[in-house]
Image (cartoon, rainbow, N blue to C red):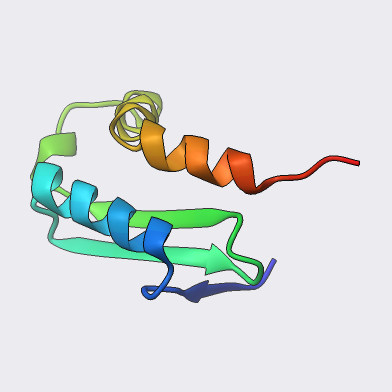
Length: 78
């Protein structure tokens, strides 16, 4: 897959804002696959201390549930 930083996409911007506001991360990068329908998040935050990767994943998914639903609405199955 080809990932690139994609800060001008409205969904990416919304994701970055929510993640920044909630986690105050030391590092945050939101990347999109070429079509803008798949996103990858790299984040480092002290709020993840003591949490398993699965707990972190669930927490981020819950925080970004509105943005995730918008991404899913972009997918067309024919």
